[in-house]
Length: 258
Length: 123
Image 1 (tube, rainbow over the protein chains, first blue to last red):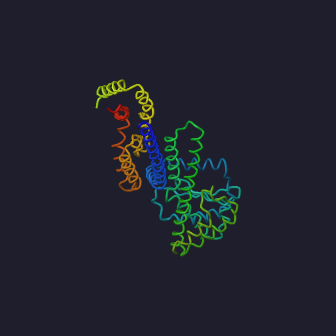
Image 2: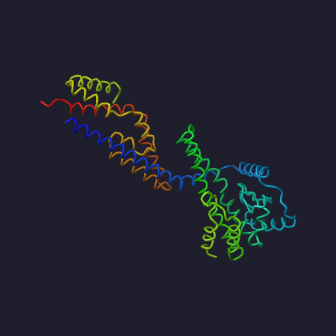
Image 3: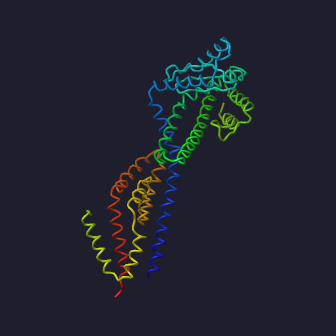
C-alpha cells in the first residue's frame, strides 16, 4: 500500500510541476509577444502624444548640441545651395504650418557620410554628402519627405518612450542586481528598439513614397536614392542595423501604387 | 475559517498522528516532508502573471486551466476587451496572495488527514 501511495504522490507532483512549467512558458511567450506587438507600441504612441511641447524642444536642442559637439561639423555647402534646398523644404512642409512640430532644416558635414536624420520636434539634419548624392530636386524631396515622415509619425519620441517602457518593465521583472539581468536587459532593449526602428523606417518610406507620387506622379526618386546608398554601404551588416536592407525597402516602395 | 479553528484542526491532526503505530508514524513524517506545500512558493506562483500556476501547485488542475485560459484569452484580445478580462482575473486571483498562509495551512491539513486515513491500520 505504502509503495503505491509513494508512487501516486511522485506522479502527482511531477504532473503539477509539468503543468506549472508549461503554463509559465506559454504565458511568458504569449505575453511577451502581445506586449511587443501591441501594448508597447500603443502605450508609446499615447504617452508620446501626451508629452508637453517643451520636452520635445529640449530633446531636439540637446541632441543637436551633442551631435555638433561629437560627430557633426559645419556645412561646406554654399549659401545658394542651402537656400535652394531650404526653399524646397518649405514647399514640402507647406501644408504643415499648423502642426504641433516646428520644422527646421539644418545642414551639417559628417565625415563625408551620406545621411539625414529627424529629431523629435521637427529638426531635420541633412549632411553635405547626402545633398551631393541626390542628383536632382526629386531625389532631394525623397530624402526630406522620408525624414518628414518620421516626424509626422512621431517616431523619435515613440522610440524614446518604448525603450523606456521596456527598460522599466524588464527592470521590474529581473531586478537590477546581477550581471545576467543587465545583459538580458540591454540585449532585449537593443533587439526590440532595432525592430521598432526598422518598422519606423518602412513607415517613413511609405509616407515619402505616397507624397512623392502626389507631388511628382511617381516614386522613382526613392528607389534611385536607395540604390545609390546601397552601393555606398555594401559592407553594412543587416541584422545589427537599425534600418531594413535597401533591397527590402526598394521592394516595399515598388509595391506602393503610383 | 479563522486562525483558532485551523489551530484546533492541526491539534487534532497531531493527536491522530500520535495514535498511529510507530511504523506508520515514521511513514507519516516521511510523507509530510514530501506533501506539505510552502506558502511562499504558492504566493510567488500566484504573483507570476496571475496565470493560475498556484492552482496547479495545489493540484487543482481544472481551476488552473480555467485561470490560464482566461489569462490567455485576455492577452489575445488585448486590443479590445482583453484588458478587462485580465483585470477581472487579477481581481479574483490576486487576493489569494495575501491569504496564502491560511490557504496553504488548510490545504496541508486536508492532505495530511488523507495520509492518516491511508496509514491507519485496517480493522
